[in-house]
Length: 140
Image (cartoon, helix red, strand yellow):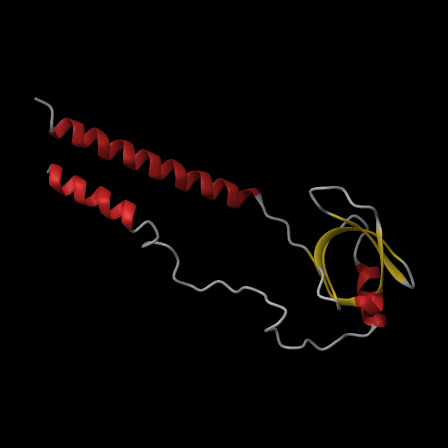
């Protein structure tokens, strides 16, 4: 029994990602990305006017700069945003013709956090029960 537990422990340490998702993750790289068709400034202006002020948006400029920001105002000539960064940045004004993408950022719900906590609690309970059964089997 000790040898089996030791082998399982060694296998767990040597192969920690064997149960990880095998789906490849997509990474974005500007140098290998296919050129995206550019929307006109008028399209971005009409889209931005429909977004409510205070919305969180993901922006990519034609220069390749990407950032998340809070939409403050959609003017006729430019977009006024406040970048969400660890170190505060001033308000920025972006002309619509400099935008490559403008997306409304999706907010994560508490269900994801709750699901993660439940999985962690289940794993912890399983490990505890396994150790309890192991201790009971070796009780003299």
